[in-house]
Structure formats: C-alpha cells, structure tokens
Amino acid sequence: MTFKNYFGLFGSLLVAAGGMSPMLHLPIIGNWNYWDLDITLATTVYVLAAAGLLATVSGKFGLLRISGWMILIVLIFTLGAVYFKVNDYFSFVPMKKLAAALTRVVHYRWLGWGMIFAGSIMMILAGRKKKNQKA
Image 1: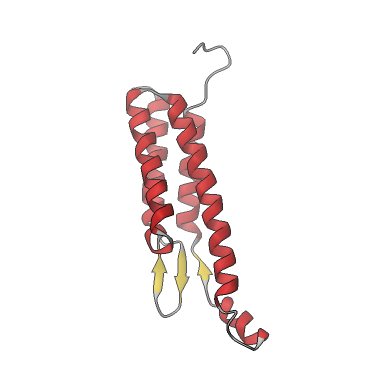
Image 2: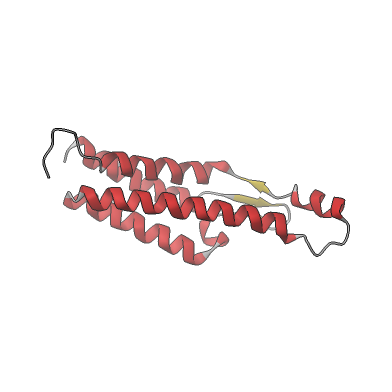
C-alpha cells in the first residue's frame, strides 16, 4: 500500500470516529453525536465513509474523491440544518429575549464536526491525481 492508500484509509476512519464524537451539547439531555442529530444523514455519511474505505483498499481513487466530496456536502447541509433547527426550536416562546436566551444554551461541540471535515478533506486529497499521471 502506498502513502495515498494510508492517507485515504486514515481519512475514512477519521470520518467514522468524528460521527461518534459529540457534535452538540444540550444542557439537560447531554451530548449528541451524528446518530442523535439525524439517523438518515448519519447513515449516509457512514455509507460514504465505508465506500471510501473500500475504494482506498481496492485502489479506486476516483470513488474515494467522490466519497470525500459527498461527505463534505452532507456535512455542510447538516451544519446548516442544525443551525436553523436550534435557532427555530424555541420559537414557541412568546417572549423574544427568553427565546434567544434559551437558544444560546445549546452549544456546538466542534471536535466531531472538525474530525469529519478533516477526514473528508483527507479523502479528497488522497483521491487526487497527479498532473503527470495518466488514468
């Protein structure tokens, strides 16, 4: 196995570990990981990480690059969805200042988000072709 294989393998495993890390903290409930945020998006990310893992082992670097881009797109979509959900979650409270204060109680845990982001970037870079390399 070459350096690109190990780099892509580490990126895929980093995405999987990032999905299990805390991504959001709710005061009474505790920490939420990707599975607690949304099962469908978490399943999508893990299927793409598994596809990247298989692509790395089999040497299909185009599939690895596409998996990395798709994970990055799903991650950005999830971050936007969580942001809007958190800001809209307390909209039933009639007092605006109280609703804003309750919204500030929910905290992002950036370790999980960062691990998935770094893993997807590693997958994209590992799947990249050199300029002089032929397909």
